[in-house]
Every structure is written in C-alpha cells, then in structure tokens.
Length: 216
Image (cartoon, rainbow, N blue to C red; front, top):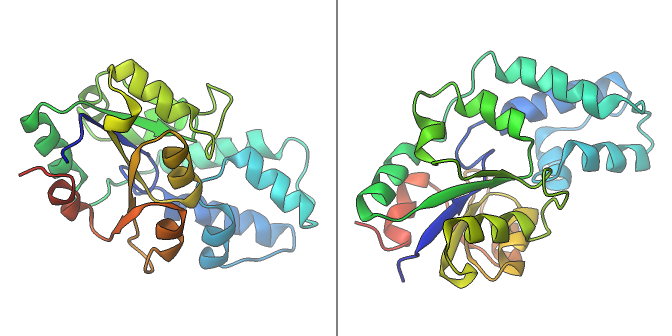
C-alpha cells in the first residue's frame, strides 16, 4: 500500500555521513586505549546519540572526560564541513515522492546543527523537506523512543499508521515500530538480519525503495 507520508532518518539514509562519524569515534577510542573496528562500533553504537556513546564507553572502562560529548560534536562538525555526500539514489526517491504528491520529513537522533551542516552542502536539499526536519534531541527523547516519528507525522497531518519510515539502525527501526509505522531498513552492508529482527522490511539499495513502497 502506498504511504501517505514518508519519514527518513538522516545519517546513513539521506546523508552518507556514518563512515566519517565512525572514523572519528575510532580515533577517540584508540586515543583512550580501547581500539575498535567499524563493524564492532556499528554493532554497538549505530543509531545512538553521542551522549549514549559516551555512557556506554565509560561503562566499558574507556576514560572519556566529562566534557567529551561537546568536544566530539565540535570535531565531528569540522570533519563533516569538509564534505559529506548523499546516499546514492536518495534524490531519485525524493523526486518520485514529489511527483506522487506524497509529503516527507526527516527524523534524526542527531542535533539540528549536524543536519544543517551536511544537508546544506547540497543545494536545495533542506528546502525540499519544507521545514519538516526534526531532531529527537530537541524532543529530549532519542530513538528507540517513537517521539520524533510521532512528532513528524503530526506535523505532516498524517496518521502514524499511514506513514512509512526509512531507517538503517535497530534503534530507529524499534522507534518506527513503537510509533505504529511500517519501516523499511536500508542495509547497504551485511544482510540486515538485525533490522529484520527489529521489525523492518530490509532492502539493500536506496534505488529500490520507490518500487517497494508502491511508487512508479
């Protein structure tokens, strides 16, 4: 069934920013004597917030300082300002939604400032969302809480059950399911079994999404 609205996560779904974020986290973990691979970090931290990363790392015995979260955001913003590409195929999906008259929004665990930096590098991208760009941090309810998706649906004037969410993390899928929304999980790496287990319909290329949700 074609949705009445689509809500996208940001990092790893619209913006190809997760590799850079994990590079920075890997540098920090190595600096504090706890090196981890990208695969290990994806399994433990994908879809979380910088604050949740800090808490988990501290619980593992990594001696991150009390002011680490703010400092890491500064490092991340500087790295992202060097250039952040789009996920391949996302522009065509937005074009198809516009052609079908289906509204869309963004609901991210990241701060608004991060989305402004990454999306602002692509002329017209922010404007295409028509102001419907929402941060779970502003709502003080990060995923897997459903608040950011429920907030986006209400702002679009669409009932949650008529919305589709596009995610790439288990916490995001759980947020969508808790919101009563159908969720498609993008697994560009791996088989996506973790996303499927959380309740998503798994797909592997953004170019396939339009057909999956009933668009021409």
